[in-house]
Length: 189
Image 1 (cartoon, rainbow, N blue to C red):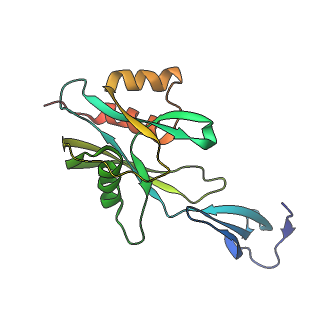
Image 2: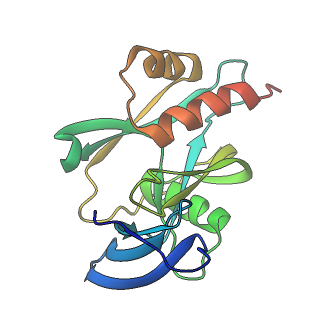
Image 3: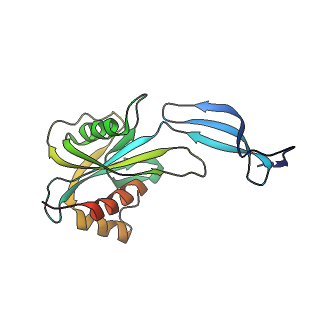
C-alpha cells in the first residue's frame, strides 16, 4: 500500500474508488483513503450486500435443541457446523432475510424472531454486516436449498453446541457468536 501525505486539512475517509471486479456474491473495489494521520493510501475492499443468520431453537426447554447445519465450505476445505444464514436480497430487511434463509435451508418457519446483534465479519477488508437473530416457536415445512448448498441438519442441545464452540469444533464466527448470545438470552418457558 503506497501512502502519501495529504495536502491541506485532512478529512478521514474515502477519497476515490474504482471497481476492479463484480461477481455474483461480492465485488472488489480499490479505494483511495485518507487515514486519521492525514496520509493517503489505497485499500482493497470486498463489497457485500450484507446477510442475516438465525439460531433456530426447536423447543423452549431449559436446554433447547438448536438446529445446526453441517455444510460443505470450499474455503474451509470441508464441512463446518453453522446456523442458517444468507445474503440480503436488494431492498430486503434483515428480519425477512433471516426468516427466508431459515425456511430455505431447514424447512422451518418461525413465529418468534428476536435480534441478537449485528456484526462486521472482517472489517479489515470487507464492509459485510451480518444481522444475527434467534428463532423460537418453529413449525416444520419443506426446505428449498440452492444447487450449490450441500448440507445436512443436525439438531443438538444448545449446551452441547456451546461446548463445541469452546472446544474448537465450531469455528464459524457467526455461528459461535450466535450460539453464545442465544445461550445468554434464552428464557425457558
